[in-house]
Amino acid sequence: MYSEIYEACLAKLSDYDLAGLEQDERYLVLSEYIRPACVRFGVCKQDLSDRDDTAEKFNADLSDAEIEIIASLLAQEYIDATSIRTQELMKLSLTGRDFHFVSQKDQLNALMAMRGQFAREVARLMSEYSYSGSELFE
Picture 1 (cartoon, rainbow, N blue to C red):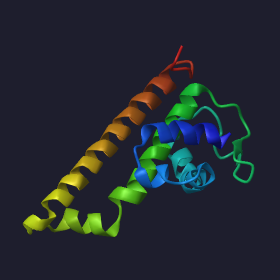
Picture 2: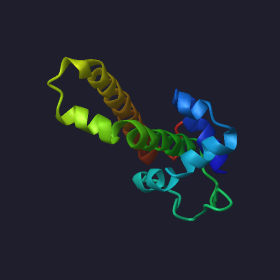
Picture 3: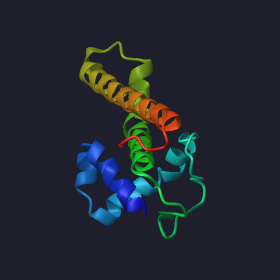
Picture 4: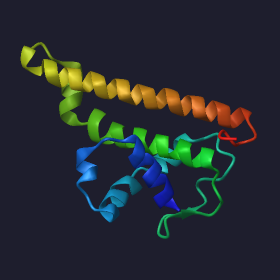
C-alpha cells in the first residue's frame, strides 16, 4: 500500500505545510511523486511500474528495504519540486548580488544540503540493496 510509503516519507520530512493538512490531503500531495520516485529506483528487483495508482498499491509485495528506498526518493522528489525547483529559489541561485537575499540564499543552501543528504542516503541504500539479498535490515 502506498500509505506505508507515505508514512515512511513523512517521517523524513519536517514540512509545516504538509503537517497542517489532513492525512488524505497529505497523501494526495505525495501521490504526485510516486511515479518519479519509482522511476529513479531503477535497480529494484520488483517491477515498480506494475502498480495500481487508483487502489494505491503495488502488485508485488515490497520488502522493508524497497519501501525505505522509495520513501527516501519520494522525499527527495517532494523537496525538489516544492523547495528547490521553485521559480523564486532558482532566481536566487542564479543572481543574488543584493544582501537582502542572503538569508534566502542560506535557506536555499540548506535545502540543497538536505537534498544532498537524501541523495547520498538513497545511493547508499540502493547500493546495499543491489549487492545484498535485497534485505538491508536483516
